[in-house]
Image (cartoon, rainbow, N blue to C red; front, side, top):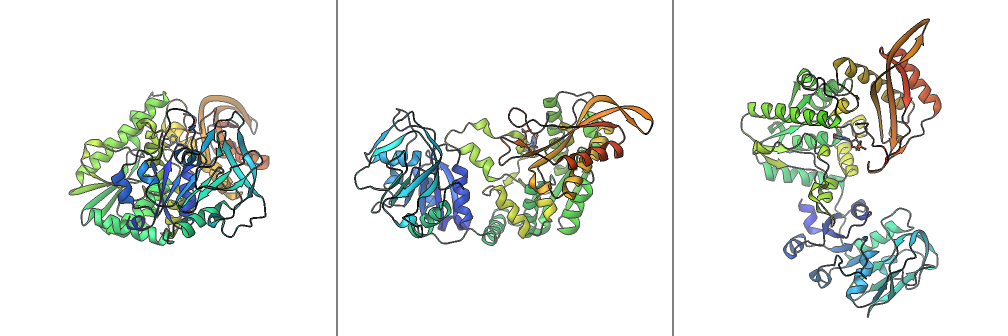
Length: 517
Ligand code: XMP
């Protein structure tokens, strides 16, 4: 993007769990931030031309032999540096201060008092103690030459230090974490007062930049996109459509494992409302045939994935003169593969919706690969994509196929579609849908006895699940009020033939996963 080159904060990641947060905070304040590992080469560094550099925290100890270091050229560049936690210890180590290891950890809240007020704390009351978030065991014991203490906490005498001449500012605590008082102000001061960045990372600018970039990359060639109906691919479709109009062709493959009414909703949103060229392929029977007698979850996933790619390729071949394939890759996927501790197998293949057909020889267009999910959502809103679509819970690529335990048959799919529909409808009716990160229903291939009217019947059990999570790596169970659970259960048993019992899944992640398969 053109914006980034003129006004960018470079974050060097040393493996902190908060690195992504630093980037988000900088961006929320209106400046583009990019995360790179310390293996970043000099040429790339020069081409990025950052206005400021943040050194993240990380699990290493500078007192051990093998550590991740900051490249020399960064420290000698004269570009302002904000070093956080491990980053601060690295600075101390480099400039010959002293860092000592301690078994005593300082984790969680700490009370920070400012000793030497400076530009990083502009607008912050120096006399008032600040509640800050700490997560360290090592600490700086002796300042490097030319550095001054910023402030202290009860356990840490040097909880911040700076060298105004070198424009290096270090904090032992984490300003990027919302639990830290004035964290936003500190980051604001760094990017605007110290680095002298200009506010440019705004949704309007990002959008127009992305559109210009697409036009530059694609010119008058044709692009295909596998549309999943989710937020990312819909936003990508909409951006591409704005950039290249009818040279975008979206393919939506109905695998028969979508939510109730999903296909007509997608047609309505993409085709009718956004006016995007859409090919809908009804492939339900192909998928169901391939899934016959298959009960192993991994086999199901594999079959669904491979069948999807095969159908997508067949469709693409029918279209003439296609040069590009668009994908909804987003920034967390990119960071995962480039972090300091990255392993190439880290990217979850299931998040790469549709998978990339390798032998198609199409060039990739990934318009949102620099954006976080919340930024994608904001763009979606600005593009007038209906909020029901923007705020919907995630839905896995293999769809209901991994929510039906045992064999996937058309009658099981039908049952689950109706159960899921009632669940989501009731959560929305009771205004709790948006407070839940993900809700789902699971079909269980076991039968239980029930009684309705005067008749006994023997039908299936379904489980419902609702979780709260920030990153979907861990999740806790939502405490849905009993009255609502009761209503959901009674509607399901009364309205969905074939279901006699509803259970509520109260397993958090870990040890459970969000999906059952
Ligand atoms: P788990 O079950 O691993 O799920 O706790 C974490 C998140 O990932 C989603 N998920 C998938 N998404 N294809 C996808 O596109 C998949 O195969 C898949 N499996 C799980 C899940 O819905 C949750 O949001």
